[in-house]
Amino acid sequence: MSIITLLSTLLSACSSQPDIEPEKFAGQVSDSFRTDIKSNGLKLFTYRAILTMATPQNQTLPHEVRSNQKKRSRSKQRYQGPDLTMWTEKIEHGLQQTIKMTGYCKEGYIELSRTIQYDRGTIRGECNDGADEADVAKFNS
Image (cartoon, rainbow, N blue to C red; front, side, top):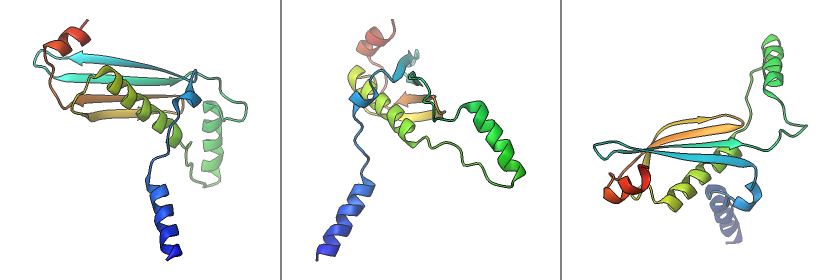
């Protein structure tokens, strides 16, 4: 019986997203949220986040990555690229908090495009709800 409990605990731990603590990222990320309300009431947005902290000494710089790629191509090894999982989670969390704080997309949104790089990310989307007069007054300034 204890093996089943242990397995279910492990599975639930693996399936749940890790909690992101905003305090850990204070001063490390600069973000912006641009809204665009069309004349037909369509609500679009662009969320951008940029990593503002200095590159740690042990982190590979872009030109070093390219140099390493060339070396690997000569040795037939496949380039895997940097792991952007944590950075992607930071960007997604920032977008969710921004939408929550501004109240821009009241009924959720559809992601139109996403670009994630090692030091920046952009997510563009369209709200599921249309703009009302209050939205136009608040966000079209």
